Image (cartoon, rainbow, N blue to C red):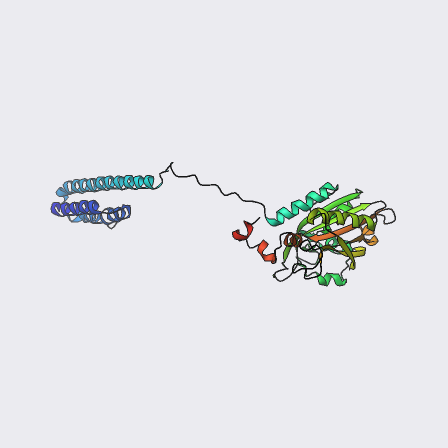
Length: 339
């Protein structure tokens, strides 16, 4: 038994000395000291040892275990020290190297454009108002003179949550909330994300942004609307910009119009950018429909107003001459670094 214990201990110490790392040390510990290890098997065989020899054999086993454990701990400490030194060498800071410039982020082209539009209208005395993206059908359609059977509802493929709740298709719903408060006069713009079930392509997305404006006061006329939007266009695209209004139809305004601006690339002469027309359509507008006033509790005989709406992405695409809307959302650093 003494000879066997000596062989086990010598084998263990030799393997520990030759081990190449912490993982190997753990394997050796299990092989000799584990539940099925060689030293443990000797203890299990104590029943075959004569009773008078058991104390002596037990002492020898304990001495062998102590020597193996001490060697294991010594080797483990040496390995950990070597690893720590290697890590410190790898992580050392060379103060003679040039400093690394911290790369700073910047605003997205959509954000730059939105802030510019907000600045223009705030300068005209407008208030920026936000509202919920999950909206009631009433505020998104019915209160804007678009009842359930209205054809305009078919033109806006809507994401419905249930028959009364939806993801808003326009930020005009924010204007209804403000009109219902009854705090007149109103001068506001309502920027925000809207949702429509459109296929993704160069000019369409199921999620995009709108900026809608509303003015309600006494003695407001279409001339006020034209003057306001002309001033907006000049500040956004340049003082030489001219505007043109074309008759159109929107359920919530009457009369209604679409507004074009002279191409800021060619000055209205016609080029590739404006497809030879000299004009670029940028927004829809009109005088608020009397029925919209009535549904919000405003007397259409006493108050008049105008409203307009423009797509934020459309302005950004035009202003920065981007030909594909998808570039705004692909997070391509090569594209975004240009702004």
